[in-house]
Length: 406
Image (cartoon, rainbow, N blue to C red):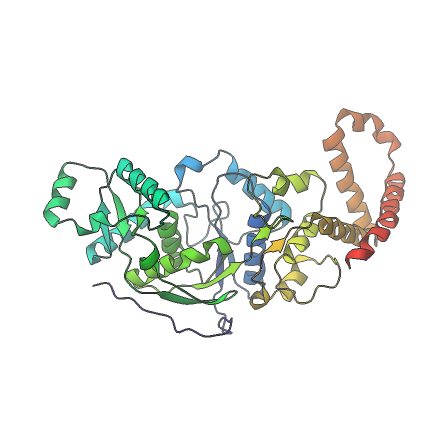
């Protein structure tokens, strides 16, 4: 019999002050470029881990095989390295809890799914795609969003045995128990949602032998000993499902903290398809990675009162970060502020000979990449002293622009 446990509700946002063995993860899918929202999630995980002397793990969630785009993992690693958000454990670096790529962990999911089948917390579903498509269309017609109707939950053992003997394709669905599920989110406070009232039993293992996101993330977070899950607020509605899976497997859930959405100026959600929010876009435009990280750090709170667009190094951002102070409201992405953070970084670099020399080298790399042969022809006319004068002119020109945004 599946036993359901409930969290005690409290009215404050909090997490244990006894932070021992902090382990957090950034778990993107290899379906495209790393964008602003993804980097912000990685940054907040990194800051939380390093402030608490914990570990920051990179895990690749590639179980949705149809959406994988070749080269995505390599580009992701390159952008994390460029930004300075370096994992403590990852597919490249390794670690004691690997493999860190989900497609290399299939036996672990199959083993846990079998345990749920044996306990009666899950069942085989033999419904065809045609039948499921009809259910979806009917739900659209009646404007109901109940999802699956749980038909196969009620099959007799003899029917199941017959279908298995016939080698009928099947998925494995989790039996949603009745009653609300409550939990205390570090950012959003007490949350309660009755999954059984609003949704049908959900798939945990697909017919191709791969797990769904919901199941794989729960299994991996437990086996990798993840203590806190920091992720986008779009996953808040899925958290009760994950808690039910933890309970069915007899595991203690981690603490959850959902980060506010980044939005356009019209409050619409930033789309992953927008080229202008890809991290490679900002790198190619010549923005400093630390300026971009500071820009994302203030998008959502967690750093106290903001006093102008001051650029801090990663160690300072770690010391300033407080997860309990993260906002619950969505955050407008105002790229004008990124220019101000970049200006702040440049002013800092112009303050000493060593950093100025490094800045000139960085600028030469950007010019060479952008102009190619044209730069090679003109390089002899671009002395360090000339570039230095250009940079100081830029500093003076930007001073008049920064004041209104302080």
